[in-house]
Length: 288
Ligand SMILES: [Cu+2]
Image (tube, rainbow, N blue to C red):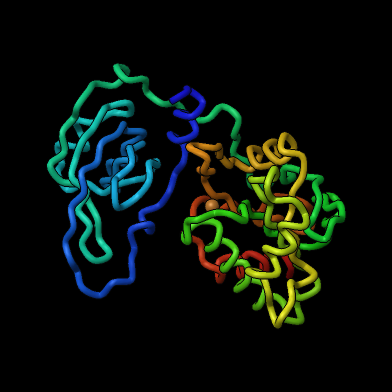
């Protein structure tokens, strides 16, 4: 694996909800896991691990795991090699039988991605000038005057808790927005594809027509956006997004930004745990 790939995987911060199945029976299953520690969260007792494929359960990726043994939190450091059993019981999961297999540095400790920078709340939001699924130019500058919600997705994303969830949440947000006369005409939604080589405006138009329909059509205030891959990367990274190709798949983090009508950044949600109601509240604050 190249250093770039390591970096990308190391910073692919996924969430535990990947495990949140909807099964009722709390059957206990155990899977062997091995990988490299990326970070340790002592308060939440979670260790983020860049792990190898777990055959029959999940592909190689980087995500946080709960640990129950105190010594693990003390013993492992970013870069430590680790092996463990992943226990999945109902909606809960954790690591057992943890062993530290190598010291940090001995197998190349990962570092955070170089390109991504976190945008600053209160500052002018990072600009973009790209192309919408309607085949029209779309730029942050031209959306000023509206409150704007920006997220990053790609049409082929296979993980239901990632891009499809962002889009479902946007549907919920927009449904509420469009039914509230106080804000209906003053909100714009922007879903920027991080797979612009594949996601052409035509592909995004078809995609939007499948996943972003409200009352039978894609709402006028919602654009799926693509553009030159280098430009898209610049925009995505300016919002703190980390992504890259790994084994033909795009691995990525998540960022959803709420921008005020003055173009200033109001809020950034990292990850997939935000709820449509939170963004609705932000929008109502932004549009008094
Ligand atoms: Cu995705």
